[in-house]
Amino acid sequence: MTLFDPLMWLTPFYFMGKSFSGNGKLMGFEKYTGNSDFMSFLVIGYMISSYVSTVFWTMGFSLKEEMRQGVLESNWSAPVNRIVLMTSKSIFNFCATTFEVILTGIVCHFAFGFTITAGLLKTILFLIPGIIGMLGLGLAVGALVLLAKEANGIIDITSSMVSAFSGGYFPVKVMPRGFLFISLILPMTYIYDSSRAILINQTPLFSLQKEFIIIIIAMIGFAVLGSFIFMRVERKCRELGILGTH
Image 1: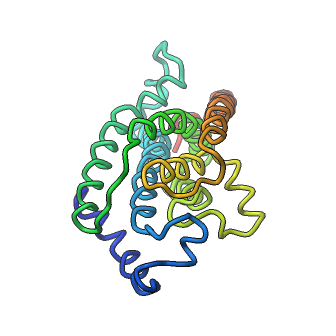
Image 2: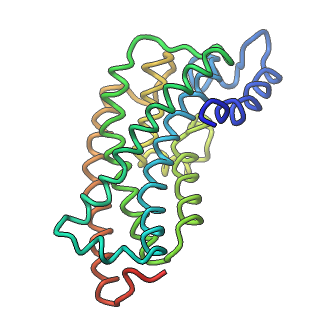
């Protein structure tokens, strides 16, 4: 399905974009992004959204599964920091997601003509601290799962909202001011934006240097905040005796 997923999700956008283009260009889209390469915009958004989904589903759903199997409390009795247990679960999934992203790029190259300019290593430099910031958000989602004892709905809503507000499939500049404010405080916005600026030469929201600084600050802030929320909720669940219930 890794080969067919990008085709199923992106093909409707491809033909929709073609239907609204004039002389091969999307003037309205170009006004917001700096060029008319809407398909590369969508492909990069699809790739990075894969990492967003990986963070939320790995952390949140694994907790729900351990609750369902009745092994959460026994697993957490090990002399290992809870944060380490949570984040380490994502390592293999990040490797698997990276493999899927490479396949997506190959498939989209032949299907939609997707190509990137030089700058892949620079993009990775921006992506790594962004993923660390995402892990902080994932910990906060894990805390919600511990409280609500439900994973699917929480993860679907949070991951979809983060991708939407971060501009996963459309330029954030088109959103109303209130929503745009939310977008500008999410670290993922600058991951999407800087990746597109580096790989396909689209106009960034701010200079790449400023966006990198924002990503680093957000990485620290979300990692600390997410860890704090998760540890407080985990401690409260242990006090109430509801840690492993489902």
